[in-house]
Amino acid sequence: MSYYEEEDLDRFSEVGKHRPDLFQKFMAWYQACQEDGALSRREKALIGLAVAHALQCPYCIDAFSQACLEAGSNMEQMTEAIHMASALRGGASLIHALQSHNSVDKVSM
Amino acid sequence: MGKPLPVIQEESLTYKGGSDFEESLRAHNLTLHADVITTLQVNVGKLCNQACKHCHVDAGPQRQEIMSRETALQVVAALRNFSIPTLDITGGAPELNPSFRFLVSEGRKLGAHVIVRHNLTVMFEPNQENLPEFFREHEVEVVCSLPYFLEQQTDAQRGRGVFQKSIEALRRLNQVGYGVEGGNLILNLVYNPVGAFLPPPQHAIEQDFKRELQSRYGITFNHLYTITNMPIERFLDYLRRTGNEGRYLRKLREAFNPATVEGLMCRTLVSVDWKGRLYDCDFNQMLELPVAKGLPQTIAEFDPARFARRAIMTGSHCFGCTAGAGSSCGGAVASDPVA
Image (cartoon, rainbow over all chains, first blue to last red; front, side, top):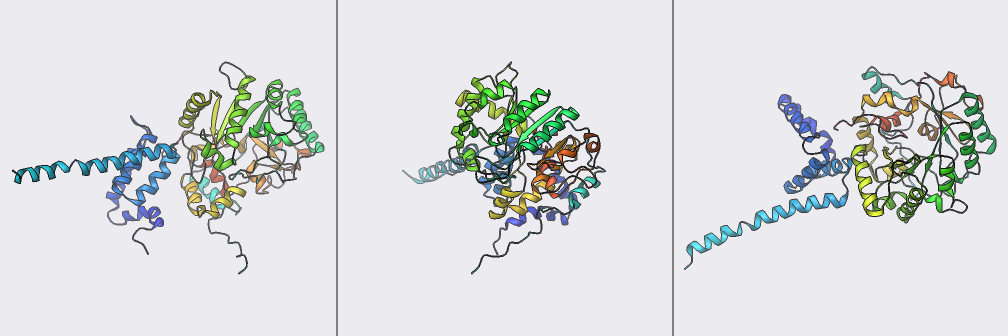
């Protein structure tokens, strides 16, 4: 058994077994966020896919890969979204080089 | 070790008396009955120059089952006797049937609106070169399969080389006046998902197709129809082979949208198979699920008055037409709810 099971994605609602009121509030919010608004459902699915990769959540990656396809995105567009998330993660690490520079500078002549 | 016995999975869409689909209808206080019949949809057989991975007909170049001239004459007689407004011809590749042009021209002479479900590449088969001109001469509405505006996806579903041929065929249809703004020759495209997922919202993907086909290839068309892949025959085999069956069937059930029921195509059409037998839709035809007992079973005995308001024969496969924005031969049938 792995910690992550594909079938568990379909069991998400079981999280509502304890404190169903909180889970229902979460689901209402979660679903409302995905509706067409100032951003289209397709754009929101691509954001979801990018965030899923930044968080490295296998459930979210699975769910939002499907959501992107069903919103009309293709692999070229989805891959660009994934690169965007990955580049941001890389950049977020790299910018911390300045912390290192600052630390080194502080103790250096 | 021998070949393992086939396993009927728990969630197989094999006809089960319509119980689970009927349950979903009942849960929403709905029933599924026909309205007035406006379309005779004629499947002239399983012969096709392609063998697409999603095909619910299991059509292909080796199939022998095609409609005879005798049955085609019975179709024409039904059109004449009952003044049915629309003749919708499908297959296989219907153009490969020797009676195809006869059916089209007779249908038009009788004043019917004629729709042909055209796979585009058949235009490059022997003796089919003048199809665009034939369609134009008879003012046929041409509905073409093109699952995506990119080569990789299209060829993955329909076979290597199909995309480039399809683009060339669309150019030829444009050249004779099909799908041109302000013209009266209608060229519609059909989008099928290239895999085990639901179609995107029709209006959104139509915009993508129009933009991309115009900018990449200079191609124009009228409308794009999104059609859900039906888990029957070859697509069901694909689902089973790839371990997607359970998940896809759950997806269809969970996406049941009661707002689609009123617009389902089975309410206004009768489907005729290559032998002249009658069904509520082309999918029931492939499942060999005929119209309800007590109704005429063949086109020779057809009487639209008896088919109006009939109870539709349903099965679990009907979830394929009610998922999301719904699916029909004319595309989505309802506004698209958020899944």
